[in-house]
Image 1: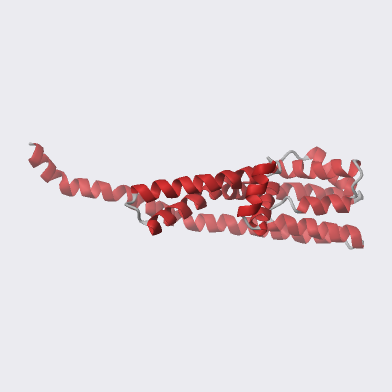
Image 2: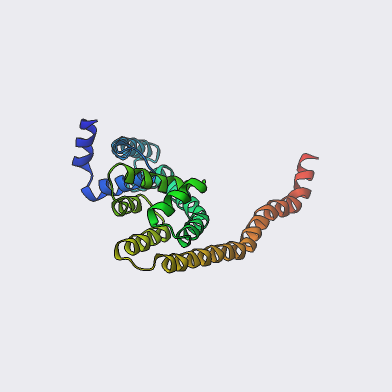
Length: 232
């Protein structure tokens, strides 16, 4: 593993290595996943370039474009698509989790107690993340430190903003309940907006599918006399 790390450090910029380590954090991968990925990507890119160069009549520019496209697809399926999917899942779970947290805070519990009660009563992906926060506070971390570390593991900007507001309210003693109420309203508004956007896009998708299905049928109708005459 040390050899792979050394090769990766020599070939890639520190900024690139850090970017992929952050992707690992978002996906809760082990630390060496990005190192292995970057290491094997070097050889897969070389292989794709060589094969493309040979098959495409030694056109360097086309071989380079093919390698870039392959690299983009590789990163998308290995990291980006999974991060987007996880982000959607967490944002879907966030409404229920933060609404229950708000009710618990209104009952007079402090943030630590409210989080623990919410985690124990809400069963979803976001709750699993907060369960880690609660466990870390039991092993020596302050709640503030645990929330800051947790925020770095989340790719959703909306959830990051809520965690920031909770953390700042917790440290400064500001009104946490009114701040969380505003955040929940924003979450609900975004959810409604996303639903409306999806509904508005449906006619376009249906039209595209209709065109895709109709064109072959039209061609078949136009060409059917010729086909029948040829085979008849």
